[in-house]
Image 1: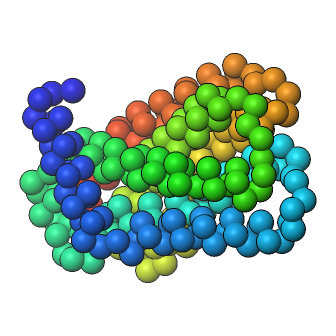
Image 2: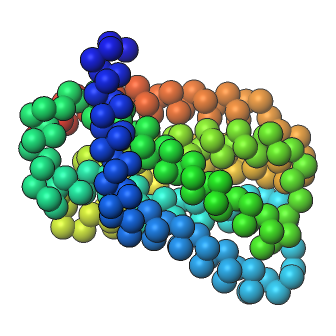
Length: 223
C-alpha cells in the first residue's frame, strides 16, 4: 500500500470516528437491538438451555441484524449532507473503501465484544474453547464489514436503503455465516472444530476484500 493511500485511509477512518461521536443514533441502535433481543430471548427461555448448534445460529442471527441496523449508514451521512461528491472528488477510491471498511470492522468488533459476553450470561452458555469463539467472531465480522461496505456504497441513495441493504447483504455473507456458525457451535462444545471451516472463512474473507477493492474502483468513478 502506498504511503498516500495509507494516509487517506487514516483520514477517512478518523472522519468516520468523529462523525460517529457526533451522530450516535446509528451505532446506538445496533447495541440497543442486540440488548433488547437478548433480553427477550432470555425471558422467553425462562432458564431453559439451548443446544450448542442452535445457540450458535441464534448468536449470528443477532449479530447480523444488529449490524444491519448501523452498517448500512457508512455512506449515508455523505449522501444526506450532500458531501458525497466532495468525497468522490478529493478521496481516492481505495482510501475511501479501506478507511470505511476499517471503521465498519472496528464498529462491528465493538458490537461483538458487547454482545457475546451478554449472550453467554443471558443464555447461560458454557464456552469450551474461548480462542475458537474469538477467532470465529473476528473472522465472521470481518467478512460482514467487507461485504457491508461495498453493498452500502451500492445502495446509497436508494429509496428503501435499509431494506435493500439487508436483502443484498444476506446472500453475499451466507458463505461467511455457515462456517462461523459451525465454529461457534464447536466453541460451545458441540464436537470438534474443523480446520476446513476456519480456512474457508479466511479464504472467503480475502475474496470479499479483494472483490470489494476491484469493484469499488468502477463504482466510485462511474457514478
